[in-house]
Length: 287
Ligand code: ADE
Image (cartoon, rainbow, N blue to C red):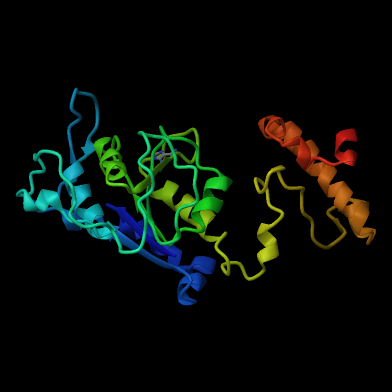
């Protein structure tokens, strides 16, 4: 998988050279490149933002700079450059597509997310945005099959809304996601979260693939995971639940499943409501 990230602080992503992400890159499974958006500016101040049209506090990221950068990284022509760089042209149609051999995704309306798994070599353009739909484990699973992800990190009051609209209209699969109901200073941390959630699901990423099978938020019967313990059996007066030491796998599984159900009902009742009944077994119904 190829991942391009555009930011005014590309150094944020140096950490991707560490740990499992670093190993995946060394193995050639993953190629992550962080780009500085200011490299696509032409003015002496390398400015990327301007005041909001209609008034209001803060600054908004300019579409012209983003478009030059995204056109290049997506392999599209750059009509703004041809028009002299001010971007004030009539509607434009790029003359060539991103890469030979991929079909553009169906154009979707603003903010709606395509439901299909992207063709593995089609680029997916992703903008973190606190006002977008929530990024979930199922989005991470779907995107772990993509061949090319391109993330654009907004700063200040965000990016001009026409940027995602424009690329959707070009047939690019564009997503906007929030990582939670809080506001960060910019998209960098949100992109780090999404990249980690996606890449660890790629086949071959985990040394032991079983470690991602029984996780929280995974599968149709998604529950919070049961609690984990290691040795010693008693530590500072606190004992590991006895059943876990019994060696009876059936009993251990039942204990863990009951604990997962009870913890989910207490902490995330919304997940219990969303459970598919088919994901419950007879013993669960007694719990
Ligand atoms: N940018 C700022 N806050 C964000 C959030 N919660 N999710 C995604 N992008 C963001």
